Picture 1 (tube, rainbow, N blue to C red):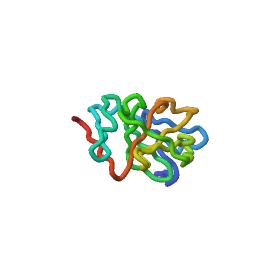
Picture 2 (cartoon, rainbow, N blue to C red; picture 1 turned 120 degrees about the horizontal axis):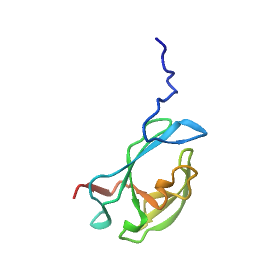
Picture 3 (cartoon, helix red, strand yellow; picture 1 turned 180 degrees about the horizontal axis):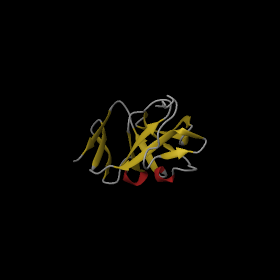
Picture 4 (cartoon, rainbow, N blue to C red; picture 1 turned 90 degrees about the horizontal axis):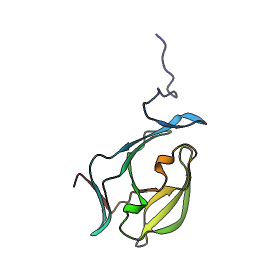
Length: 131
């Protein structure tokens, strides 16, 4: 019986992969319930069209919720911070009331499903599913 090397990942149905590194992939699923996102008392997002992204890279990352920019109820400002993900590309960060609250990727070669979506994630944020 042969063993699968630790660095090899079995195919995952519906996975979006970067052809440069097949061991890095993400699975994007529609969130079946309504989502609201609050920062303190402020309603930031209310949507029935969120996406859950499960990202596998050098580790399995915490699932994230991405929402359409159209569903954001407040004004977000661009931050000077940028990062690069080997799977998704270059990220642009956003702030609400001076605090960083999320990011979006500016272009995709293979993951267009996230185009126009922002991942909101901050310590003072409350994400409620199924309201």
